[in-house]
Image (cartoon, rainbow, N blue to C red; front, side, top):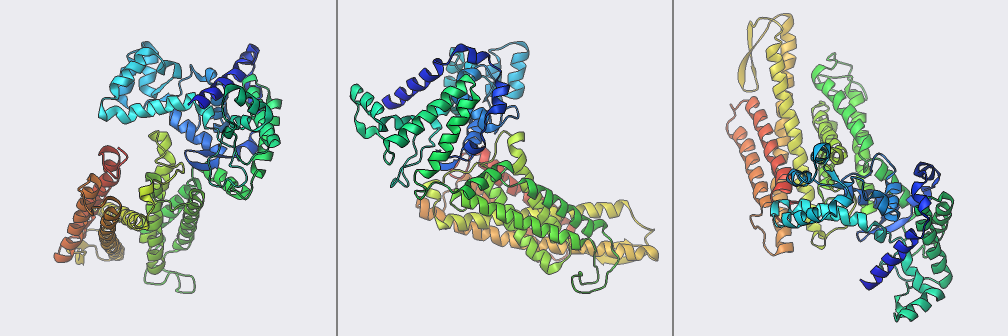
Length: 591
């Protein structure tokens, strides 16, 4: 604590020594002149994980204001500005308040439009948080367990704002120090003669020096960081660019074989951040594939085409399938690649938070759907699972803007209890079942919509009768007979596809629960504890047990009833996956 206080005093001294005229300078010109391209790719250890500066900036700003950027500005520029000029941000509304009850209590300290703005935006300034009455209120609200998580987020945002400079640990372990902690540049002060003399004068031991750095290296890096901090506060772009050039040249060369990320890995991480964690292109591809498959299954060209190489064989061949299937295939491949990139960057299997489980579920489901579509070539499986992929990608991309939560999109370290192969088996099987349940929901919903459409738009007065999926329905004769025969075949195909998916979901979910019990016994010493997540997982499985077995035991049960039950089962699964995770406290939840 004493050493950290010393660094605080030194940093504040550097900032306060800057002439006051810097505060009046036009920061827009400075912002345009600063070259952050190389600094953006510099590695840093943040939250016990090595990442690039771009990721540090985005994650830090998300902690402060639940957005990866403020006012559409470059996240790295904003984060560095807060770190080196915190006083310039003290009056700006950047601290996010999530809970509505807390917003209401905080708005009571203001009047007029400002009170309404707090309620509407949920943003307050650091200076507002520092007010005595606000601190007293937050202390009182900490005793309310329902609001404790939101209060802690406010405190975390404020502390991140105050101490953002103290997270700039971009000095890697020196030679022979692989795996050791990364350091602040200011700590290198103890490595060269002037710093050691000052330590001796203060009575501190020279052991405080950072190992693996020569006096020349340490002094050069320390001076570069000083120039960066002073130049940034003064608005001197030339000084800042010179400091950035020194840091980006020297740091990766200190011990290149000691664990410093390669240029390829850092560039990939930057691409991953800029594409909303790899979701942008997949949203487009899945949407196009879903639309084409929907045209295939519902309003496509029903004219048969010759059964030749590359064509869809069978009595019903659709030309649009030739375009939909490749688009779906490319989407699945890109989805798989983005998850592979995340695994490479994180150094672990990506299934350990809500973001990863949503995308992992969609990926596993889309792979299953791609295999079924390749086998059946009916457009139904492709349409259902491309919708699952589109929905998952859209949710993960839009969540930060709609709910102020990125669902864990930022790559983070894995807790020790999660580092077991049973976790990977359990989670992947469970999320695969969730994707199958979502696909069943799509097929069931499409069945009901088509049934409604055919009922609203009959072709001709009914004259003949034909049996369709368990119940007797009338169909017109003459010209309308062929059309209604195709309608009946489409409904029957949807029902058959839905039953295939339902049975797979039932078995996947059951096996996943069993694997979860094995993992729980391995991790917590008991296979079952009636935790909310465990309980509702069992409830979801029982629901699908009923859906599948009632249909099999009662052959006359209408396909329409199965479709409604598919929708109900999906609602139960979503409550288990989202509601329990966020609103019921337990070992598995985020509440």
